[in-house]
Image 1 (cartoon, helix red, strand yellow):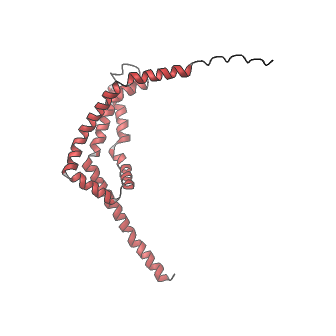
Image 2 (cartoon, one colour):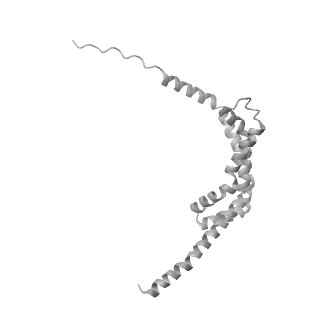
Image 3 (tube, helix red, strand yellow):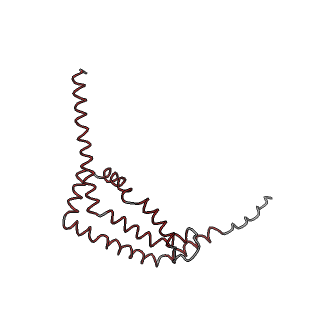
Length: 175
């Protein structure tokens, strides 16, 4: 290959690289807009609020003495501070951006943005948190009736599989 062709190829590659970076930057900006429209930061805050509600049962499972319904404010604050620092949107955002970038093409992202900006998309974004909450309540209601039967099945299984094996009959002698 002639030196001029090598130089031209290198120049072409150098000129191409910024356009790849620009495409990645554009795609990342669009993903950021999806996050803004879908209010992912608020969803993360709601998740933390839900964790706060479950903390007493976590405390009981971890063996902290006392009434599980009266978790100390100090312990609750320490746990929530730790979880907030580990699961903050600022820490999670780069990973989520990469997940979206790897999963969706720029055309698909453009389509999602168009949908989220449409009246139907806005209605979905507004109503989904309420629908998700009601769905969770419905699932919990259904599970309440399931637990007694699941306990019975587990107990039955445990009894069946913890029985001492019966002694084998003595071998018969051959005449």
